[in-house]
Length: 476
Ligand code: NBP
Image 1: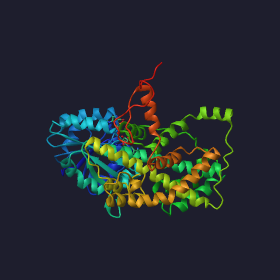
Image 2: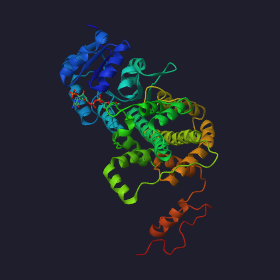
Image 3: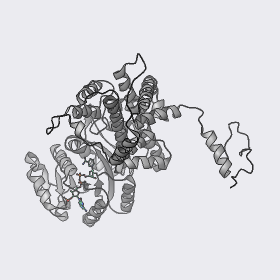
Image 4: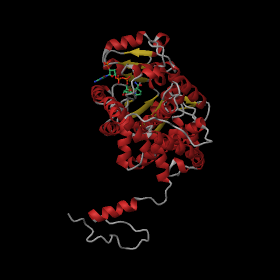
């Protein structure tokens, strides 16, 4: 029997869709699932693609079915299950075989797994896959981390299944060990910020301007034809237009306003903090989900403080919808600038040489944050590869100058109206702090020197590094 080009373990939502995608693109694939009945179910539902699939009930049979050196995608529940599966697989593998974790792993676990296999005959790839079920089936964005040699073994198959943007595949090798999973983590952090900012603009339209879900849907629909064109704006238009089959009222109006945060969103913020890179809009978005989850506390607090009257108004002469659109655009630039800045620092810290234009490129299709905007980021980083931050590239500094005034008007009006806009406000404050040549940390340094004799650097470079506040140490 002809051997499979690749193997896949884990036939739940993501794994089965990815396997069908791989088979559909003409690659022979062997599949295995811990619970064998699921392998049968999967195979029976594969229709015409059955001829490309080798269903296997045992690990022995599975490994035997793949052409060496064997690339094996592990698409199972992230965490301990991956280590267990790897241990179960390991004794069956041979020289050059590659275990590929395609789940949402913490990149630190990926580095540890990569290191564990370093001196063995096996190799490890950590592969971030974005696009959910639909992406897995018809073309995800794929972020690969591992050795270049192992990437070469899987490049053809992965290129065949990845999403395409103007014919270019949305898959790339991004660097060693945890590079792929790190980039996926930051993708998800940006996704949190993007969604939160859209949610805040929705809140202004709903609560500050009294618009119905269908009216707001139309506004997002018109924005989707302009510079905000993206998958997230497109689905926002759609979900706002949807009707609840039970009550026949807008679906969004009867969905509980509680969202969770887990895994990648949280990790992106933790890693930004670990590296000392400000990612305030992403942090605000993760925290906003945590605050949303405190539903009963929020209801109790509303009883004490009352709700704001939410009367949102912009200065006379403003074009309301245009300002909201531009404000969202400006804030979005802030969130992406922060995400890319976190990746730039991680690249230095972990020695990955992350290619920023390539990352923007492979996010243009297939993933949740896909958009036309990412094409502009690709161009900006290609034209200014050494830029310290996206917002200072020539292309984006012009956009920032054009859009930040609207963000300021919208944020100021929302704050006055008592409308919570943590991500929009964080993005605005990020711009303001980033472009402030002289900030206020001089006072913090003075305070630190006062109570802890920490010393400070002087603006005149003179060699005298303590203030005239006594010994320099606080007395208690
Ligand atoms: P789940 O995360 O729900 O995991 C279910 C799969 O894991 C089943 O195949 C199950 O086998 C297997 N499994 C478990 Br649970 N414990 C195992 C163990 N100890 N050994 C071997 N197999 C084990 O699947 P999913 O939703 O398809 O997601 C897969 C990965 O992709 C996750 O890391 C997820 O975070 C990531 N991801 C998901 C999405 C999405 O939209 N769902 C998007 C992007 C990434 P069984 O059938 O025997 O129980």
